[in-house]
Every structure is written in C-alpha cells, then in structure tokens.
Length: 388
Image (cartoon, rainbow, N blue to C red; front, top):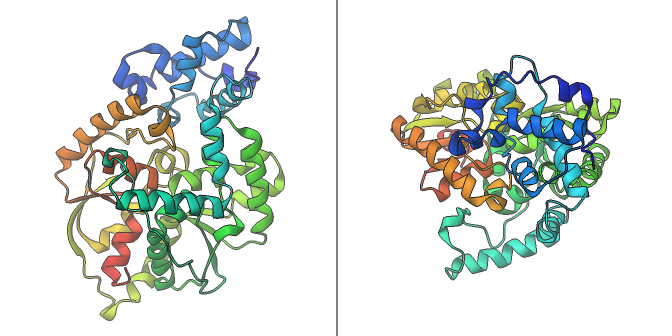
C-alpha cells in the first residue's frame, strides 16, 4: 500500500537533522526512526520505493506525539504536521492503527449527552476512589450548570472533554471576556467537538464531518475564541483539512482566547477599581502547549495577559519542548509520554515556580499526573479580577 502523501511536501525535507533536538520522542529514545527526519525517510521508503509496512515502520510512525516542534526548527518549511496526519489516516484506514476501543471512545466525543453520562459515571467512581490518581484526571463534576450567553460579540468554543470535565475554565474565560467588554455566546452542544483527536488518530473522514458541522453551526463573521490550544489549532486548520474557501474564511475567525484578550488589555485593566490590578502573590512558570507555540504561533499573548495579574512570570529553559500529553497520546502511548514528561518536569523544577500556567487541558492533566500544580491562564486572571 501507499500512504498517499503529497509528493512535493514529502520532497521538501532535506534531511539536515536540525529537527532532532526539538523532537521529544527522539530526545528520550535516541532512535533515528523516532525522529521527524527518520519518519519522513520511512514515508519515502513506503510511498516512493514500495517498502512494505512492517510492524517496525508502523510503530515508528504511530509513535509520533505530533507536537510539531520540528516545524518551528525546520529551515526548509516542511509541513510535517500534514505529512504525519496523512500517514496516520492511511494507517487507520488500513486498520494498522487506532483499535476499535479508541475509535469508540473518540466517537463518543461527538455525542454530548453520551459524553456527559459517561463522565458522570467516571465522577462517581472518583468519589469512591476507583480511579487511579496517576491518570491525572481533574476532579470531574457530577453535574454542572450550562454556560449562559451574555451577548453576541464573540463565540466561546467549549468543545467536548473540556466542557464535560473542566467547564469551570470556560466560566473563568467567559468572565475575563466579559470584563474586557465582550458579550459572549458559548457554543455548547451546537458544536460538540472540533475533531482534533480524530485527526491525530487518523480518522480523517470523521474529523472532516465535524469540521463541516462546526462551520454550518457558527455562520457569520463573529470571532470564535478558544481556550484549549489543541482545539484552536484544529479549528485554524479547517482551511487545509477541507480545502474550501468557506473553511478558510471560518479559520480566519478563530483566535486563542489570550490572543483576543491581549488586544484589549486596556479595557480589561480599566474594568478594575482605579484601573490597578492587584496581582496574585504567585511565581508562575508558563508552559507553552505545543499546538499554541508551534502550530498557532500564538504563545506570546499568554504572557501579555498574565503579566499584570501575577507577582512574577518565569520562563522554562527548554525552548518549548513537549510535555508528552499530545491530545490522547498519553493514553495510547503511556510509556513514551511518561518519559517525555519526566524531562519536562526537570525543566519545571528548575524554574522554582509556585504554579505552572498551561493553556491546554491535556497538558494540565498530564503534568498534574506527574505532581505538577497546573492551572489555566484564564483561571489565574479570573481569580485576580475577583471573578473566579
């Protein structure tokens, strides 16, 4: 079989190796086949030379965390994310990856009532101590009142798992947006899932169906604000995923929530008594989710938004290296994810912070499972505003 990759994109890699130190799986294994350069060589061997898809090749291609840190480092502008997603789709279509239980779990994400019912069962199991803490799950609410619209200036994209498990983060984000003068419409069940996890798993047809639903449900030109880095990256990539003018226009309306708030800091700070923030007494380390830093290239606004509201911001000295969460990667590749996280925790410990700010729920859960106190930037800002 072939992978069906765009030959021009596949030929763009010049095998220089500058990506190697930015690849988390190569860093922890030292295995060339677990690097972007090595994986692209394997893609070429299959597509150009007719190499068979051996279990070893499938394992190497399926072991990528899809952090896309290699894209930031690449001098040739290789679209590695497109290459690996097309590869994953071919492998999943051939049933070489993505087993039935993973497909069933991902399908549940598109059905809000089913997801909430399953989450309620999981929440009950948590209360009885039946869910291992090493999984890093947040305390899942048994029930949570739905978000209420406060106006029609912006949409707040709420998504699937985050809305079921971490709806308070959405509440905090909405409170910050309202303090900045925006009327907010949460998307709720209208758009149950962005399809990011389906794309990562190679379920391209399902991801495209969810993308078309999102576009149909959110017409017009109202900005769509996202407080999950992975969801934001997926929504911004609909133009590529569907390849239509309508999809590209939709993606142009999508912003990470901190991108939008950073442009309205005067109104946010002006909403405070005497227009003077009272910073939280915290030393905060910023952990950049890969899909915010390497895909959206929108990690700097996090710092702009947080800076007035905490005592001190500190940077990690790892140049944005992945934490190992990778959407559902830490579920399907637990050992590699754990080894990647161990390296990340070393950088975090050197920062000597009170708390880590991460703009992606998966990163927060994965780091939390490793004992790192992690909180969403919007929660910190809402606390400082007295709105949490």
